[in-house]
Amino acid sequence: MRHSVSGAEHPIVSGFHPDPTICRVGEDYYLANSSFEYFPGAPIFHSRDLVHWNQIGNILDRRGQFLRGDGRPSGGIYGSTLRHHDGRFYFVTTNVGDAESGQTIVSAEDPAGPWSDPIFVPQARGIDPDLCWDDDNELLLSWTGSVPGTELTGILQGRVDLKTGEFIGEPYRIWQGAGLAYAEAPHLYKISDHWYLMLAEGGTERGHTVTIARADRPEGPYEACPSNPVLSHRSLPLPVQNTGHADLVQTPSGDWAMVYLAVRPGGFTPGFHVLGRETFLAGVDWVDGWPVVDEARYDFTPDETAFEDDFSSDALHLRWVAASSEPAAIAAKHPEIGLDLRDPGDGSPGLLCARVRDLEWSAEAAFFESGRFEVRIDERHRYWLEYENGRVRAVARIGGVTAELGSAPAPDGWAKLRIASVEPQAATMTAIGPDDIVLSVKTGQAALELARLDGRYLSTEVATGFTGRMLGVGAVGGSSHLWYVAYGPDSQARESEPPVE
Image (tube, rainbow, N blue to C red; front, top):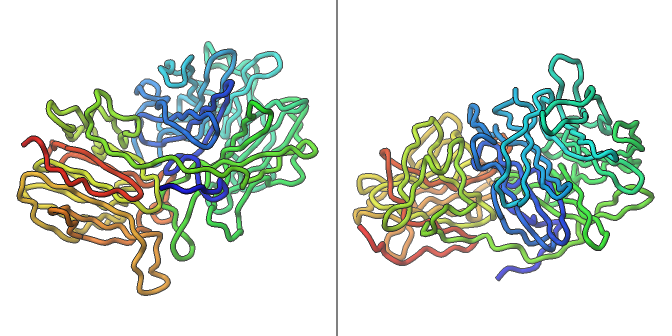
């Protein structure tokens, strides 16, 4: 049973869902996130109450919208903005693997898709674009970066022709922040008689903050909020850290709320966050024309994260994405049960992936004859089980070192591979990580432990980058037959035996 939690300590969308952006249409809220190298990209969610969210699509589900580029870890789709204007949804983002195209704008009548082919703004180089319409209904693009052929850098803005992707007039600098490092992620709003520009500053680590300024015109000049930063957990002894990169939304009743990213670190100092940056929610009051953030306004029962997927549906569930590849290149429905997995031959990890969404969890993948099941941050930081030739091996890669840690026979032609995150076993204070990762093979009703590993090596503080832990299933020896995958915060191993083979 799930119990009520405070929004100050628990995300509304858990797991690797960073850089939240939100808009409202009538009684309906829509939320989208960055997704980096994983395709399809930019998951989008729907809610009626701001605290319970259901994924309704992935905005960038065609390669023409999201070119693979070099496919590097923490490349791909960065911070974005989702807005609704004149009956249509608009989404603007940056694909850092296709930097010369500048910013990418797609639109849709239905937020569940399909979304249009992209309009590129090549003169706007950089990251974290924002869309806002001025009083003359002209489109304002704000972003963090530069304009090729000019000396303009920083937080920039310009009016864009949506038909051509070209600027109307010259871009210009606007407010550059409160003076902290890495001012980025601009969001522009017209609220009452003022234009408000909200930024993220301090970097997306422990110094992360939200700052805001206002002006009479979108171009400025801007007056900084005297209480900046309006949100930050820097140097505070709180279980949630790295708070920043926020977006505002007004409720139908006229109240205001803020979504923002944050992390939940664990283990001994400096603390290790393993799920990536997650989406949190706070209330907002306006005092003397400035936002005051109330992090503890919302209490809620968290959404269910457990799932069991036997892939019997005609289409893959929206949770499944591919690291630097496409799900269709890796997986196809098996004629009888489950999926046929294959090496896509594109230089990618060859994994069908789903986000880990809990701090403690267990997951199981069942294969016939061969298969691979892993938990990962990237190719250099991952733990996995590999089933082939009647045997299961537990393997770890940390940086440039790969080691086999244990093995066991699996002679029945199929195997259930199990990975779990559990409380760490540590003999000394400095050995306390965020968790231990246990790799097991299921034999009868018992799970035979093959390896227990320190979870800190699958954390952002060790691996670096902008993503979080993912579960992945893939082929061994060119092709494999996957039966099912089950996951949950208290997932129990499935006791049934396979109906085929």
